[in-house]
Amino acid sequence: MKRDAQTPVVRCPMEALLVPPRPRSRPSVRRRRETPWQQPVVRLAFGNCSAVELFSPITLDEAQAAVYRAIETWNRVGLSVHLVLVDQIDQLSIDRTSASELAADILIQWHFASSDPEELLSAQVHAHADYPGETSLFGGPPLPLHFNADLLWGTEIAGCYDVETVTLHELGHLLGLIYHSGPDTIMYDAIGPAPLFVRHALDWETVSRAQRLYESP
Ligand SMILES: [Zn+2]
Ligand SMILES: [Zn+2]
Image (cartoon, rainbow, N blue to C red; front, side, top):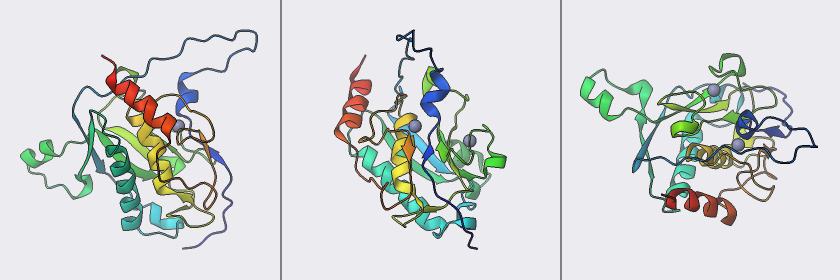
């Protein structure tokens, strides 16, 4: 299926959810404390992602492979938490042992904006996630990593949002990073389509923030 769609700059809502707009006369607002995972392994699973194929020029396999590359990029940072992709929840047997073994901390899905359980996805919001521990907005596990299936997704395909780039950003939140950094960092909240907005490596500032978060007692 093909459709003509605009691919404007869109935003990740994660910081704005926690930091209310402030009057200019009051410069200091208390920031929420970023919280790391307390466990050594965080398990990610793909839920229903097939909606990505409806409008986007990539296959489900290509989209999931891009997500996996982003997971491995974060793992190479060497934080004290390791991200493990466990399986496709949709394909789980009902065997109780394997179900509990595969229980996911994070569930990755493509939702249409109209069916996003958290009602965060919109024409201006391409994806969202959650934060671990006491900073979680939605409870859980599993915490959501939700992509907006109404938009065009790709792997370095011009005019599409790049799956790997967006996954790197949202995994930053899922690892505990709340605040969006400058436009040169992966944690910047706005993104446009490829080829301009493609970033497959983590920047120094983001890596430093994550390392500080996981070094703190
Ligand atoms: Zn964000
Ligand atoms: Zn959602």
